[in-house]
Image (cartoon, rainbow over all chains, first blue to last red; front, side, top):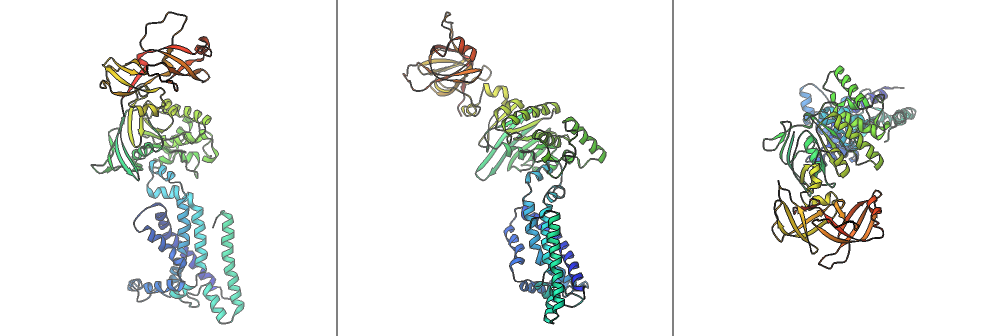
Length: 217
Length: 369
């Protein structure tokens, strides 16, 4: 059996989780610790990908990064194609999963006693150091739980990926797309095997890592 | 040296405080919500005042007019939070050394070990805060604040979360550490005993304002106002009319009697004749005149009848009705405190009517306010 979809899905999910952490952690910290104009709007925008139809998200994403979209054209000018490449699959998976990470990390940061951060400040630590030495170490369980959920959501994305990355066998066809493809082609044995693999990956992460690190989802 | 004058407006609360202190222990005393902790947060730079100026040892930490607001990181003030706020994910050693991040590793380690030894925490270096007793936690919090050799120590209600027996023990320990380390200290408290045991100077807060700032010896003998006196639990706060006032004495009409109160020759209080003033009489300074001896010549002689009494263990508090021209009979007029020995010797349990004398120095007239 062709294991390319599994390898691609794992690679895309890892990359998407990394991207999600890089963008989502600062966002979560801002929402948990700062008051600024437009904060409510930003908080709503973060949750949007959870509730909008994936095809709607995929459509807007495609208008941005497609060959004729503003971002797509800018990238094309420097020789980078995004739409219908594995990179687009990473982007799609990130959009799908970032809300899960941000909400979990935000709750984690908010639960850290602000007096501990104040104490660190009076002891000479900069905001950056306060985050790394106090806030994150005390919220790591929530952040890890969010990252695990985000990874699983990224692994399972179908609609957004289909819209911006397509379902090109051997290029952008991730596990969920491959399963759909096999069912369409009436290759039920392969669909069955891929489905079992997907369940296995997610179960391993949620149960295994969840147990190991005593995470609460 | 600390000089502070700040204003801060919050929702439904205005802090407008100014006071100064030398290299001593200052207690900010008042009810909760009076603005004491907010003052401390402004001092530490955790809250930015709306106006004013804060100077510590000649260094301007805040000056609204000149746009100066030194970050808390750069103020070199050791802050001990209510409940201590120890880092739960770090060991005792890492907590104490937390403020030494800028130092070389060797110097950091040496200083941490020195502070741990000085505070009697040796052997607990690898423990986590949750594994420590209340007293050990307090010492770690003090060590963490003192390790970087701060210009001042700021203590925010350090003992208020504790129950009474532990509280007394930690109060003694805290007093020892403050004396031994000789670091100028600002302490926020709503506990009178804490303020008196730990502080040299007391700044009294009420509703966002400073109502008195004075050495602690002065604050009980000369409260700035009736409100301060009530805040400090002063008993026998009475009201009378001024007969006349001079630098030497103030004479007061009260219950048909004329009482003579000592005035302060250096800072005399001269209320106009006929003004109604509050004054208080120290219950432990009222003397009962022995009936088996000739009556002494004394000012402020009254006759009182015991109408109630409370056994305080080593003393008795007598509630006395004073005979006066008003003919008022309801309720006691004066509290008198006598040692238990005197109570028994004079047979106060049986004999209820006594001549009383009060020294002028035991009567304190309170400026209005």
